Length: 290
Image (cartoon, rainbow, N blue to C red; front, side):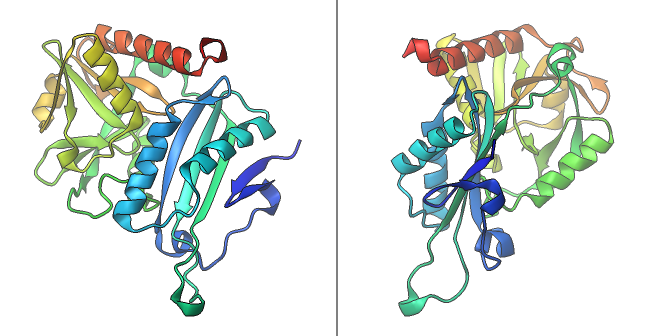
């Protein structure tokens, strides 16, 4: 069976998909992307992902010519055509070709999406907890792309690669003044005295969709949540630490540079929130529930 991708206005075989060598995303990293996960053929929190994409595009001056509803429909068709139920999807939008157009017309955006079978993180990570390192680089909340999921991702991938070379699964970023921000590809939560703590968006973090869902679930459970500025000492003193993103869902962190966090195993609040998250996925993505 041929693999298909979405490209601008329809599906094409992956082997035939073409992007201009003058594309702004390719040449300058001018573009945005969303990574999503589908369960039972339904994309979890698709509307939230599209909200973030179109908001960032407006702020950064990237004109997405496709309508939201059109993209949502094509993503569903993409899953069906590739016969995928549990999948990883990536939706990318660039500013388009940098070649001069007649009459100074704005370039048409380049929008494309791929869907592949879901390859989950090792089950051992969820059972025993992930080891993370401290990234040597620094978060810059004054960068104009800060807080947006831009294509300019090289520094994050370098940080993640260095963590993996140390047999760690993620690296945590801090601001120049030593405040905890986020992981290379994840948001961070801590538990301290039964309170759920997470860095504020003022640190320049990406406002993650899974982060948002976790905060909704915690609020519904009556948990106390604090978005704020936290130090290295706050991190190391936490009784629990976990990460979030759409692919890993909630990931327990039990060691930071080999130093144990809490009891060096996934904690009860993490377990409760992960269970609630999976229940939310089931409720929103199970065809029988709609």
